[in-house]
Amino acid sequence: MLINWTPVLSVNIEQIDGEHKKLVDMINGLNDAMKTGKSKERLGWLLNELVGYAGVHFGTEEKLMDRHAYPSAVLHKLEHKKFVGQVGEFKKLFDSGKAMLSMEVMSFLSDWLKNHIMKTDKQYGPFFNGKGVK
Image (tube, rainbow, N blue to C red):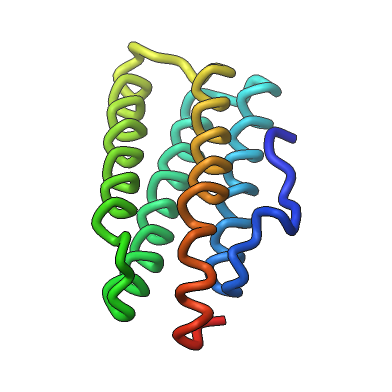
């Protein structure tokens, strides 16, 4: 398992924690598929699902930010955009056969998610809780 979900990753918002858990599961599933030698098609499908769900999750966060006028929304959205760009670029290379799924890519995905939750998402928890979002 690449990432273990622990309470330390909680932002104290039920929907967001649920989405983060799903992202953790998806990254772990992609990592398992890579390690057990699944087909390029299967890895591509899992990667596509991860990218799509990350977009859904970012949308959830960004709607909350807009609805409650979160002060750091611009910087937070920029982190999302940068991640989507980086993963999208890798996906293009993967789809064209110019890149393979590697531990380096898996480490990037898991480190980005853990760091983003711990350093960026954790900042909005108390703000949204104060607005009644639980």
